[in-house]
Image (cartoon, rainbow, N blue to C red; front, side):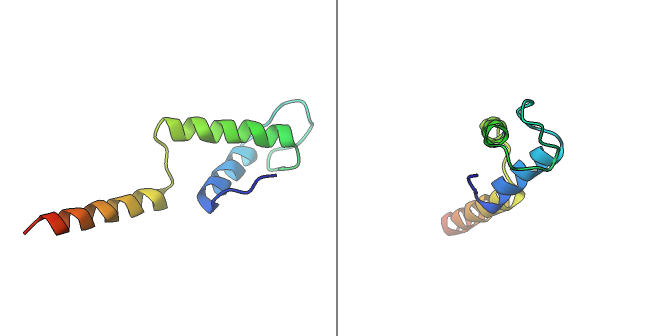
Length: 75
């Protein structure tokens, strides 16, 4: 199983906990044993990212960078 950044891994675990799985392996919500389920969850995460979902920490980091840029540009 591929481990991602903490926020992405938490999102994939949340998907697992809520029952996002391949449907053929017999895993239960919360299990992370099936490679097919993991592939499906990665696709779900990729789709969420594509529509603009981002972990709060990433949004806060980006906001701080923008604030710093504005502070440098503003006399």
